[in-house]
Length: 173
Image (cartoon, rainbow, N blue to C red; front, side):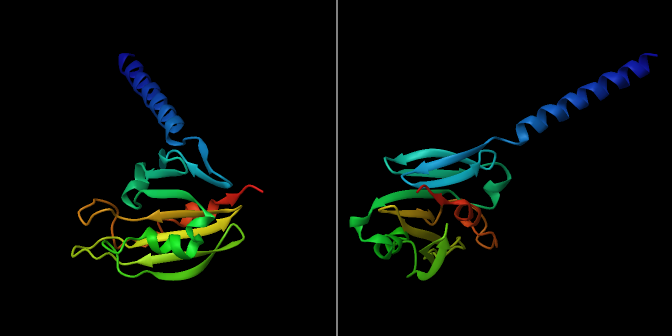
């Protein structure tokens, strides 16, 4: 009889542990709002911190931390020159080669996407930036390194570090 009670106690403890871990494994979705920009994100995969009056950082957490690096999301006044100027400044020349700039559609608007290889001797992920002009502002999302020795995701990963964030972007009308 004691053996059965022991098995029952273990089974109950395992069920409770599974139930508790299931509750914490799925965090609530949240939305980052800067000006008219809205970016939904999963709080189990990203943590958010302010980086200025019109800027936030999204830092990957959990399993996504091995696949992605931190993102910087900024809003600039249109007087700064719009996306043509902002996107080239997003990937500094001291860390990146000249970027390749292409057009991209974001939330039904035409924007720019810049990709640049690192100037580091060691293998580092590419710098990637997306810029969109909307509602009288320029919005920039960038994944970049600040130094060659920064730790981060594999430079050989085929995951687009901005992919799911840019795909979910919307602009308030």
